[in-house]
Figure (cartoon, rainbow, N blue to C red):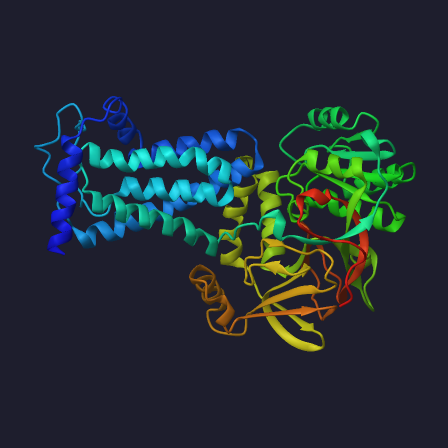
Length: 511
């Protein structure tokens, strides 16, 4: 240890004696700009403001990693290590900071934050990570240059920062690269410049106005018919009616909106036997992303070339005794659930409609609603495939979701013919607390309150009046009993073959 300390001091003295050109005016200012993470928060804000989806995700992961690294470094490790700062007698006055820090020298908090943010960004976008990394490296080196850290402090901070960024994957799993997506090709007509395609733009579903989105689509597909839907014109039934009318005169049906809009269009397309063109125009766009469709241009390329894939359509089918609105068959492309999540959806929608806090946006509203739901939620009693259960949550995915835990985020295949079923039991002590701790520690697979299975169908019965279900981000009343199953390969979705190395020709493989 003494030898390492001597080496640390020797390298520090050499940096203090060095006079690299053009950096004396830059590095002290850069070091100061990174105080309290200000440089990285400003960078994240600029990335998010670009409107690029990958940039927003990269900025979000970078900020989460930054917060984790800062918490670990500044509130835990510094108070344990308590290493003294270097003597700065050998550091030129022009380099020194106006205010010298007095906390422990080990590890470097600035270096940890820089590495955490840069690594978090790179995990989501290599392109943006390559732009941020040199700045992060300069911030880390600046802490030696201005004389407030030994090289060992900086190296330790960098290691901690990278570790914090990698740890974000436990609670926010990374989406796989498109080359890992497995799809089976399906026949679809080639529509040069969109001829024969009718696209319904669901206004208000995304961040742009319906008019701006429609103009973009008209530029990309000059021969397509673009239909704009006013979000104030009606409810979901109005959207379905508009899609049904459009399908009557279309060779292919298109939809621009979020997952709820795509859900409505998918049912119409499957019933009419029309291929579906999905343009990601909503807030989340889970289905589009699971198809590798990140931009309008991805869908446009597939429409031009007539390239498409096969997709299963999952159903919610009421069984004996279910009547009225709750008795209608519904479909889902992504997820179905009963329990905590439907309550969360209802609370979030109510907050956005009726409270000034709802103006903060979807994610802040969801966070506030989650805190309320966890405090007031009640477990649901039901029969699952004929056996009684008391559950906090039952979840079913249209295809296998990753990661294999309570926070499903993405799928690599959309036509496997199976439901991904997960439950959280409520008949064990402190079930909610236990499952939350398991998620945070990455041990959910061994938790006794959590169970998972892959099934072709699922029967639920004994649901009480007022029970709510959620599907593809929408919430609605649940029938007293229902059957979940799938229409294998019922939907054909435009998707360019060139973005996926694992596109398999021919029909879906037999199960």
